Image (tube, rainbow, N blue to C red; front, top):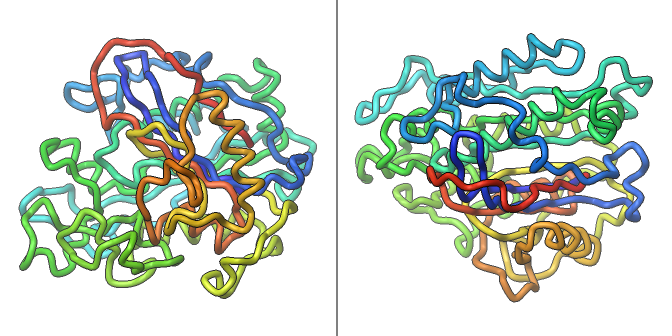
Length: 386
């Protein structure tokens, strides 16, 4: 399985510049089993297929659709391409699950549903059980405005390219692409309406209402996953800290929605581990399949396990080889255990969890600027190996 994190540096209405990719994958003897993607998809050539401005956009950043605009785009695509796409409600945000609200930053009543879009060719001769599975998520950290726009444009390129582009047609006939555009919609709304907060976490106040400033409450969802949760080298137990890990592993409804959905779509028989923390020295080998992608910004790194400590994973040879292939296309440096550019530890994050627990071997993250409005063109191809 591959975990990919992509980021954007600069954009204008139609232009996005310099993004980063991070991936986590199990390359299956570099054959990728035939039912996985075997091609490189370049978004540089297809990033301009849809005019984002026809939808509601973020104030002063009209190249990025707002939460409302993203949701409408998603449902419009599903309606326009019923044979290629569908939308699934996979869970609730914190505010919807708790019927809570933040008095300092008022939100719409009842929070939000969390949706996944499924993109695949229904007329394919291959049944769902024979198709490779890819899960892409974005919006984990809501202040990172660019990633959901990038994943939406990727979805649009797949749908508009079917039976037009040979690679895209092959992908959708052999693969199910699942995309969660907004993992953290409550806080996405907050950071759009109150941009000076630079909100990173969700809206769970925990003990924060008594102990933290108004814009410090919440749980960092990328420290809330259930592998190496609570490791103080890569997360914080201070509820006011930006990397606060929450009250327990998978305590947040947004985290559970992603994990439950991943377990639903990825094959159970490919080696899930009941005790992943006791198996950190055991390699998965090269026969697992599937791809997980988490898109972040900003950056310039390719990130793969391990991330919770500066040590190589038992599948490092395969992971590093895949990372270096990606680096050839985008010029990003490798951020992983055992690499000279390992930046810092991140425990309880999505990529280590997906690798250690569900058998995904390659994880990639990236970080360019949160959002800018410069008018530059796509200077680097966005490539994803599946």
